[in-house]
Image 1 (tube, rainbow, N blue to C red):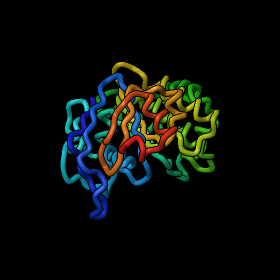
Image 2: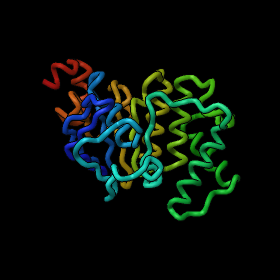
Image 3: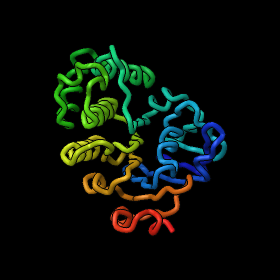
Image 4: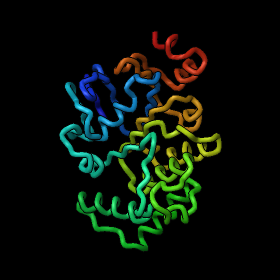
Length: 247
């Protein structure tokens, strides 16, 4: 579903990714862990098409397409979702307005009819319920005045509404307390755990993986994957640290 082959990337002339290779098949959830500065967020931004991140080598294939040849909105329409470590605030734009416009733009790109206001609200209520997010929150401006946990849950509601084929989630557990972490983890399972979907979950902490239970765990260090294992690898990292495990 997603195949990354010998990917090299830099920002402002500084090399960050150094020959990263990774394959995530449909129906799989993969976790990436690694120390600060290893290139985890850079990988997410490169996949999402964030400006300023220059790919200098390698390839990325997504659902049979050259992902790197697509503009960010084209990647989204193709079914790629990027969850941010720090979701941005958008004053003056309500969540409901933002999400309906985003969904209908993607539906139009796929040749589908737009959802009516009533159809969209029904869908939004369903997905908000999965994440235990009050619909009143979706009437507020995007992330304005939200706590860290509310921002992450709102972003997961966004993922549920857009219903992507593949999600790249950059430290979705950042800033979450224990209860919010469980809600978000269960939301990921409910929305993305399917045989025709895939997830690349970037995290620092093993505790989210207790809920999501990935098929594989990868350690990223120095801009490349240095070790791959099952969920037990995350437990080993928790006990021994990156330096000992990745050596």
